[in-house]
Length: 291
Image 1 (cartoon, rainbow, N blue to C red):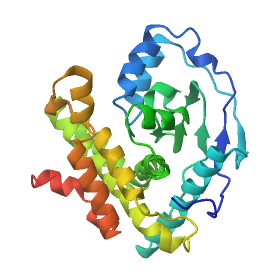
Image 2 (cartoon, rainbow, N blue to C red):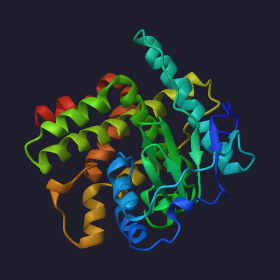
Image 3 (cartoon, rainbow, N blue to C red):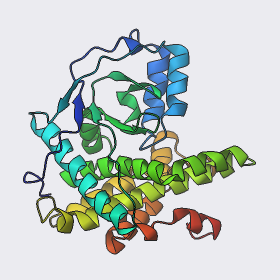
Image 4 (tube, rainbow, N blue to C red):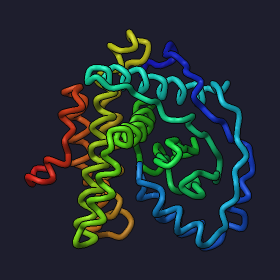
């Protein structure tokens, strides 16, 4: 993937190397979240964090330096994040709206405080709608390669663009509508269907970014041959069915929260092939049975 010439917006808060007292002591809460975390990819963190905070008291996290990190991976995250802002500013403007970028993305190690509760590495990357920030421990990218078998810089960029997709949903009011619909749901399985639609839409939005970024950035950030296949491998590896089959040897569709491998690949591809956010109506597809 071509990204080194991309604009750096400096929207990164670097907390790496800071000790978070919020997760001191580890114990059962950390282990439980570690198991949950491998099933998390863009999950609304409040549910998982609430579990952690019942076990380990949350402590305030010291703020890190905001700007552009000097290391290569920090530079990569900044370039990709900035390119998502460039793309979504154009897309919102096309609809007569103004895009508000997320608050500085937080790089952390181990655990960190958020307005959604205490976040930790085992949860994977996540977006907190309460403070409108993306949080990521960059060790997840190694996990993406070694555990999920999905190496490559575009696979990593897809992770970031997916989280930005959740920010877009927050700005458009989609996330609030989903929470309301889940509150009205008659069963956990029905509530999970809304979660699946929300996650697949974020995948589709990531595809829109991938489709549009070359044109919007003038080629400074762009996919190269084989990059999209990296994203598809990542989408396949983190499908609910793939993860459940690996973890427990069986698949329980009613418990899906993110979508099957095929669904994740399909909606990422739809966003990429159309370059149109309007093509990402996963909720309409859910209602008519074509999700």
